[in-house]
Amino acid sequence: MKKTVVLLFALLLGLTSCRQRSTSSINETIAVNEFEKKLSSDRVQLVDVRTSEEFLSGHIKGATNIDIHSDNFISEIKKLDTSKPVLVYCLSGGRSSTAAADMEEAGFKAIYNLAGGILKWNAAGKPLVTDFENASQGMSMEDFNKQLSIFQYVLVDFNAKWCEPCKIMAPMLHAFAKQNHARLGLLKIDAAQNKNLLLEKHISALPYLELYKDGKLVWKHSGIIDENTLRKETNL
Image 1 (cartoon, rainbow, N blue to C red):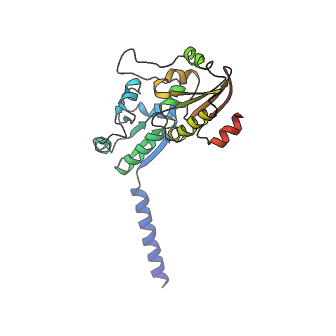
Image 2: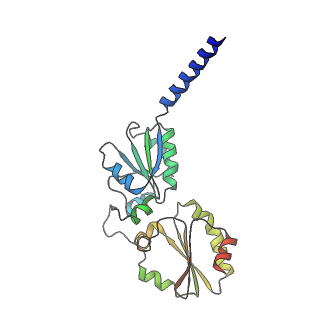
């Protein structure tokens, strides 16, 4: 009886070991400096999963653009070499995290997602390249400051089209501004179209809100927020 138990235990241990050895897929989110270090390898594949418009406005050198929301995303990533490491990024890390999960399912053995996406990359002063000259850099700081004088209070919503929390908050922010329309204006800033402004203001994550009173910053918040908390923290 003891011999049978020992044999069963040994068999179970062997099966467990085999399973552990066969789990070779890696899906890891890494910071900017580590991401940049991995780019120095000749074997890596770099994928930008943003829209073509975002890609053209500025991307990491050597990146291939495969829009995660395109109909052929899965078929396009399957054209890559699953045996080579793949580095993936988007604007703030959300879409690339989803893409990394798809790549893991497709059989890639080493996947590295850029934490914070291009926003963090920009904030760290890392270089981007563009595929066209004289690309629009969006609103200047001077233009931004001019917008703050239109109302007594200005709520600034730094957002992006592919930022899910931004989209969730959008209706609430519009309703909040409408309820306070006599003294409050809502200024929406698209991060992809105003990257220099975000860089100058050291904004590296979305969604991001700022409240100005008479042109002076009186409140700021990074991340999603509900209406009750917004009203309580801003006293509006």
